[in-house]
Length: 309
Image (tube, rainbow, N blue to C red):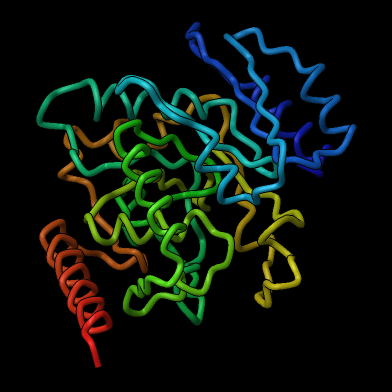
């Protein structure tokens, strides 16, 4: 939007990545008010791997609306990787995503996880959704196994089309009804302003949904965040400090399968460790129970609020 140096770094990393001969479209979604340099970078960028398109909003809408409007999938075999401009990707990011998709969307039927919403490129070092923010050691705790978590990643992730359509509907409903109170016990996400991620967290919690995460040593990932000033990071409304050591992780190289336990992904998604929103080990059954309980309590409270006094 107004970070041309960041966008240039992201585009350089995308150009340096391997796409395995696939046709990959790229779309630029810019809010109104993008500076001249940013527009020029987008206009001059050459993308040899597939179609390139550009959408510029006529009126400023903010990050949340820009993200949710950036992709409107038509079919169920269409996928999108959402990348903000302060992200940088590894050369193997596409290989990781395709490997996971072939394993868990198009492979053995037993490997399929119906409530998986997408695949993260990034491994977190910190619990962001609670206070105090706890530091993580997921590689050591899970012996390097990739895991499923009830947490969406906003710092580089692929989303599944049917789950994204459901999220769009949910977020539009929530934005039309701003007085609805949605509080996840123990979390602080209800206080996040201008965040699209908080709405997806709500939906994932209620529906017991999962995102697949990589889990390499030192949180080496397929994307990293450079923590540059924007709508959330270092904004006036954000009173939290953000140390690069807690968020900027090393990028993996062109090859990674030899770093996986057994040099392969788990054969079945059901065999992977599962973490709750707060990065604690959990089970699918417990997640379903908590999601159902949250819905029941919310509906009961809303009914009380509507009852004549």
